[in-house]
Length: 307
Image (cartoon, rainbow, N blue to C red):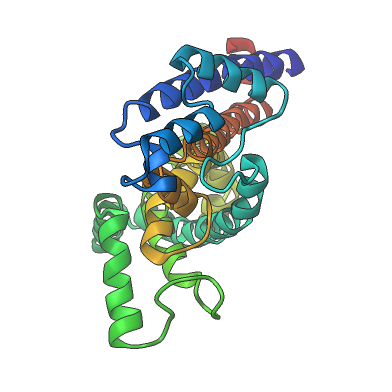
């Protein structure tokens, strides 16, 4: 199994290289010049040229790319063009807020998804099942950039219960966590419902029922254990998606995490900072996929032979 895990890990390297390469060249195609963000468009041509030389922006694009890759291989993620702050240090500072939001969102999603999936599966074809699936459909369909402002308007502006933005005030994490966790809860509840229904048709559950075991115990002990693998796999795969969705959610709620840092860096044409943010998010995606593969190998021995 360790050999399979190592093979999966090695497969992530081309993915990360592709992400770094794509982001690097696409950023340089975006209109705008970081020198304008520093000096303004009215700066003298000589000052602009001197600044470009200082930032090494006067070098050919391929030369800049090679230097960036060499820096990554040595653990150097570069420095911000705007304030010369170390990119990796800034990412470390902002990551704490994003991971805090992600953990609360994931916990909220699980607390919503498991009961909904169970109710929908247990009341299959009934009104409760339809209501749960309608909720999940709405959760998947409503985008974060719409749900966030609506929650702000209702709970902050109208009712005055929760703060509008930031993370300093008590309860500030509630609205962004709901915004970020709703879509994940909808996806997980649908998967839990399908996995539970499938598990109840397996021989293990039918045998347990033949032995006279109570229905509640069959649902929560036998069937839940059989349905755990697909739900857990989907959950781990969504870890990276939560960080990706945080870009929009953090911008809406002015949450000082990686997502907001990414938007700020894009607006200022801060190439190294944007590349660092995207690389870190991509790394989280890759590690989430790797974790899903490892859990599948551990929980389902049949996949070790298939792999």
